[in-house]
Image (tube, rainbow, N blue to C red; front, top):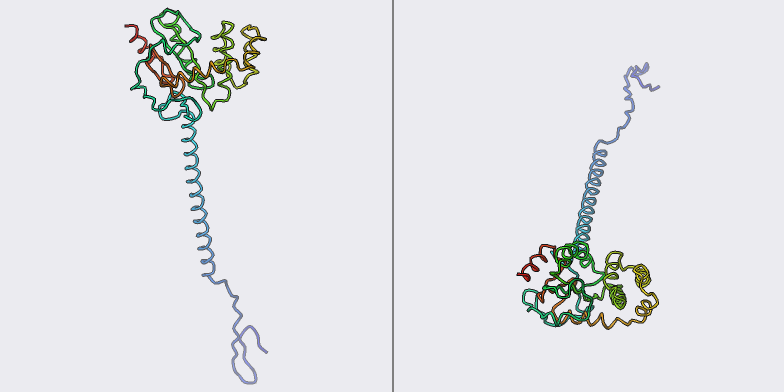
Length: 275
């Protein structure tokens, strides 16, 4: 009989050695191979993650750049530029630096005047009630001009319409101001259009008419009929004829100043005219 321990065979006196079965261990290289695969997969995951992060950063940078372009136009731009297909322009219009001084008599139409009609300095503004740069001028710069120059009889302001084609409410807003002007409340409506906005369209303009105590029947008829449409478009055409290519644009005694410039720029131009 064979045992797991060595013993003597009584008949043959031979010693039979029986080797215990050895339990087979897993091959060491098999675990190393698995470790290497795991490490490769981890590196691949990190690589993919890095590529995704780079793509996300590029996408975010592109969006920020696009937003900046929409908000500010070109670098340093202080006004809304009128695309030639959407707003009246004239071919080969001279740049602001090249533009000649325009006679005030040509710039001034029958539009409402703010200030003393005999003031030595005339500012003609071509503007759009839906333009954010025009609103910026109205809220930040005009109050200082009004306080220091209009109220003192040195400057008069004449607002003329230049509604841009891509501003959906600009045309009717301009008509609303003109209709209010028929009742001698042009600048009262002008102020509300900038202060309360034009997003609500015609229904909002009719509410503004009530607020400034217009004859609402006359105002509504004027606005609904489009009576002032041609007047607004004439302003825009005149602006394009004299070099306006975006809003706001100003002529200070006939000299073109483009964009919602800070008060100091207007002050310098006005003082130069007063000398």
